[in-house]
Length: 97
Image (cartoon, rainbow, N blue to C red; front, side):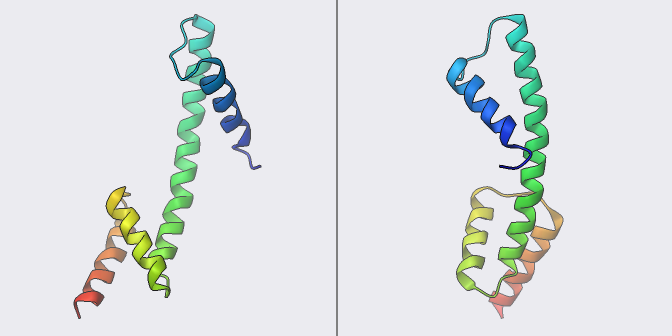
């Protein structure tokens, strides 16, 4: 329901339903795909910025399950970020003491 909903709906309707996840063959459709890809990059950057803040919040939580979950996700799909790395190092030092 936010500003990104139209893009996600378009991806579902066009890429999934119309093109069935295949690369389109016509010039017009390929131009449309390029447009979707350009906007998707902005969506990904927006999402990663929000996710970064959420991950830091979870890592700094007093709820140990939140911290454990955030650490596990970061191990599986690491987000390269200096502040996250520093926060994880601080957590590791605390656990060592």
